[in-house]
Image 1 (cartoon, rainbow, N blue to C red):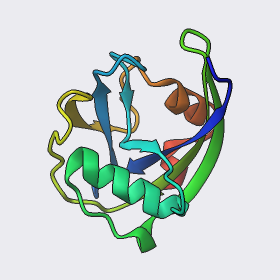
Image 2: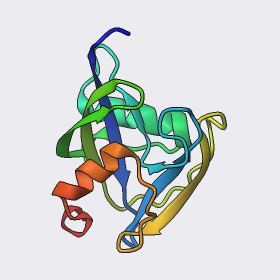
Image 3: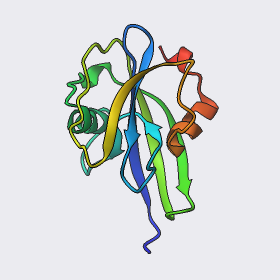
Length: 139
């Protein structure tokens, strides 16, 4: 196995009710956990471009990159798979679009959660991010 560190991105999308959009992962990497739209940063992309592209690919939602803000960075090592990511965690507020399942092989559902009632089964980068940041301060 090649030992490299990849750059990931996650976009924490909040609606006007201060709810957070999370998807239930189906892929082997993180199956059964919840996370915001996200994925890998591609060559030549800036942080917001990567987050907006991944969000559109996964949910069909069109986000203006000018409204996206960096909220924090996590260092995420997955011992079970040997994968290692530096994850850029970004936010956007006031989104009123309805997400669709655009990649059914990767995501079982998208759901809006009250920020004080998140599911327990969170993807490792989300757990690491929330250990350092309160969602209420990101709104």
